[in-house]
Image (cartoon, rainbow, N blue to C red; front, side, top):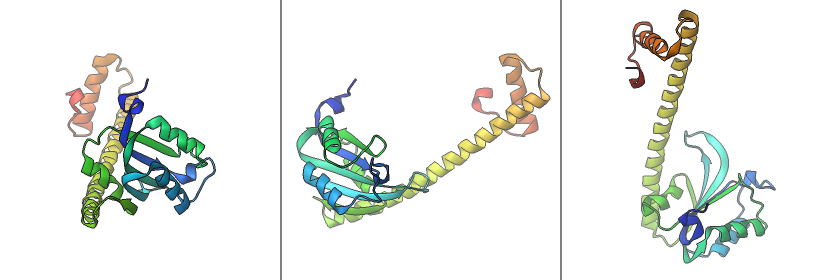
Length: 202
């Protein structure tokens, strides 16, 4: 079932392209393809960016973000059909187009494209681009730090859970049923690990 944004015509779209995932893989999004996309969309405002790092700061496949504001509303399926018929060999893992009736936080939505390497733009003052870039790079740094901390915490929790299961199997093989396992787990956290049990076990 289509959502409201998918079924109606919108002015704002963000597009992500990963050329190495095209049906005919490309090393990058060539100037010819960039121009072809922008000529078709003919946006009154746009930002196009190149990125090669992921949410943890790790290197990922080279990909491109294009955020546009169109002069006339278009439907999502119209743009998707154009990509499939345009000769740009996109596949399901190589591109994503998302419509927005109106971005929730328009400034932040625009500056998303400025967090790594902005390639080209239209409809923005130089000062605005500079401000977007400063804010976006700072937001990206904070986001990477949060994501790394979260992944580390998740890994530590998983490791602790694995140790608990191994201890239960070795030391409390007779602990059967929810209550017995619960009591044994609390004992393991408090007396074996000298740690505070998770909220679910208190």
